[in-house]
Length: 368
Image 1 (tube, one colour):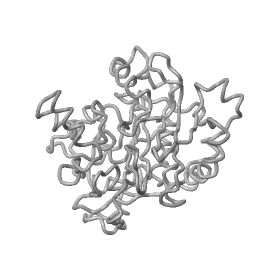
Image 2 (cartoon, helix red, strand yellow):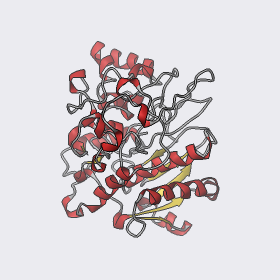
Image 3 (cartoon, rainbow, N blue to C red):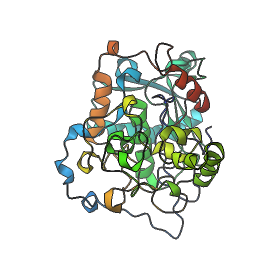
Image 4 (tube, helix red, strand yellow):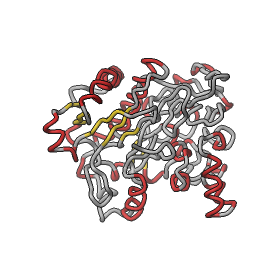
């Protein structure tokens, strides 16, 4: 089981088993929280999209601007558009099956074409004989959260990967809709999606974010790194190694945050060259209704928001995929496979050495 301190999306330039934001209600805070514990004396603020403080009308956004996926030459889609999966134990299946079924149904309802995309359970015999090419679904324990390999990453002895994995916590926090929404987020990662808020096009370069790409949405005024769980520990370690600049870097660079096992690695922008996002750098280009965006209090250590919309408006938790999330998946699976690769875990890729180093740190189980 993953330790709560570590949760980065890896297999891009890093290792890439990107995981989904896990959701948690009181009393425990972990690195995989989608909704962090905000304390018994606080109220999680919930606002409608109409309250987001920007003059751009939400419904004027084009539907082709609201997804973030890996650069396709780093991406292995599931063969034949089919996620083949099995459960680790009969007990895990009993605990997870029906909520997971409801979660995949939400993707069908959003418009993911069931005649093209398949979500197929295999029997125990095939699970054992073909483990390396199947998504192994496990039940998390004790509120430890969720994690899912992003896309299709077969077993690889050089990196320690045993094949794709999904770990789901079925703790009854926040009710049915909250739990199934979390599972739907994890399924988005399984198909190949990253977090909406980590799109480098949305981050302000002038604020010093290493991988920002001249965006206007997220910056120093609405990303509050100091509110993240584990901030003090990561700050001390980075300053000890790198001096004062190291303390700044854990809140500015996704790679540095990941190096120090710090929660900011699930918020900060990815390097533009290793993810694909359509053009668009402004508020109107962000899908604040995406199943892949974090609520404001994700991984908060103190009940204060970590990330907000411009002007401080709270980003709420979304339980259902959007049409734009579906468009992102379609893009992954409609690019001819002969145009892909070599993949990060293949020696011909220019990022192979970085992949080897970082993947071994995470064992391919990173992200949120």
